[in-house]
Structure formats: C-alpha cells, structure tokens
Amino acid sequence: MPDRQETQLHRLALQSLESLAGAGVGQLPKPPPAPASPPPSDLPEQRAPSPITSDKPAAERETSRRSPQEPKAHFSMDSSTHAAISTAPTLEVLQQEVAQCTLCQELATTRTQTVFGVGHPKARLCFLGEAPGAEEDRLGEPFVGRSGQLLDKILAACSLSRDEVYILNVLKCRPPGNRNPTTEESNHCRRFLDRQLELIDPEYICCLGAVAAQNLLDTTEAIGRLRGKVHQYRGINVVCTYHPAYLLRNPAAKKHTWDDMKLLMRQLGTPVD
Ligand code: SF4
Image (cartoon, rainbow, N blue to C red):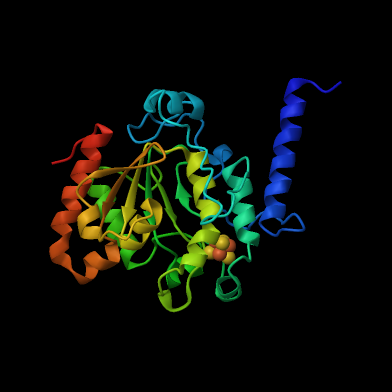
C-alpha cells in the first residue's frame, strides 16, 4: 500500500500531466537548455536573509498576509474570459508547459523562444511587464534590452537586485513588431501568468506600464490614474508605474516612477529616500 508521500507524488504527477495536456502538449518535452528561472536546487544553500524575499513556506506566508475573510488566491478564473489555469506543481514544470505552448499560432511560429521569467522563486515582490521584445526573445530573459538596463537602475536605487525579486511578463512570447498583445493572446497566456503568481506567491506586484496594469487589474483606466495608489489582485498588493521604455522616451516621467517606487518600498517596510 503506497505511503502518504508516494500518494502525494502520484497526485502531483497526474496534475502535471493533465496540465500539460490542457496546454496542448502531447509529449513530455526535454528540459529547456537554459532555464530562465533557476530551480530551487540552484539557489545557495544558505541564502542571506533579505527583506524582499521570504523563505517561509507559501502556506505560512499566505496565512500571515491575508485576512481570514479574504478568499484564498486559487485564481479560479472566469471561464468566459480566461481559460482554466495551469495546474503545474512547480515553476520548472510550468516553464516546460510554456516552452511547448502553441495556443497563439502567430506568436508560436514567430518566436525564437518563450520568455518565462527570472528571479527568486519566493520573491515578495514581482515586476510585471507586458511581453518580450526583440532582445528578450533572442536571449530568453525578460527586460534585458535598454528598458531592462533602466529597470536595473530603478532596482539599484531601491537597493534591490534581480535575484531578490521576480521579473515576468503578461505574455511569454514576443508579439511581432513589438505590437501590443491582443485580448485573445492575453487570455490564452493568463493560465500561465496566474499559475506563476500562485507558485511564487508574492505580496506585491509592480506593474510596469499600462498594458501590464490594465491586463492584471482588468481595467481600461489610464496608467496615469492607476499609479500612485495600492490596488489589490486576489490578495496581492499591486502598485503601477510607467514602463521603462516610456521613461526612456519621456525622461520627465521618471520622477513619478520614483514616487511610485518610494510608495512600494514603504509598503514593503524598506523605505527609500
Ligand atoms: S503567448 Fe502564452 S499562450 Fe500564447 S503561445 Fe506564447 S506561451 Fe502560449
């Protein structure tokens, strides 16, 4: 008779296979050659304590930051707008699902590779962009072009680094010509985004730009009206600010983004000047 651990492993394996089938994967893929998100085993054994990451078990963090009245974030999306989310048991399995996904025909045939996300798998803070650009598509990592360099400067100004936070996009594939994601594409990829957030279980999400903010919060409100306050997405605090690409074109808006970062860091309990 199987013991409890064996039964749990069996259940997780079944969930993973069902999830892969749901994403149209008929055959288990080989692991991608260079995972964008480091598996937990690649993390240092003794990670230095950081105010921006949490080594508490997800369930413990869940209990500590959500009131008993709040529904637990299981992201049971409305099937009229978003498909059922992935049930991948780990970020690594989810990344494999994403790498094999062909739900958006145009994106699947034009991408160089999928861009899953990078950072600490237990980050308290996620940065959410809209979709990979040309450099991201080439390198398989989000925010690595000029916008990414500016994001790195913003992180540094907040005494943060990429390996303390998690960086991801609404879409995992590059839209040709860097056009905005279509509603259909965003809805397709929501099954992966929501599962990714569920597995990371952050306390805060910083939306970078109107597309990410409007997608996540399901609103058409302008980014100028969304920024400067704390929103909620299924128990996660959300702060919105301008996309680094916009800041490169409109440097005068950098002061607003800095105000948003100060708001975010105050919320996180590590204020910056
Ligand atoms: S954008 Fe998302 S849903 Fe669309 S093909 Fe890429 S991974 Fe699949």
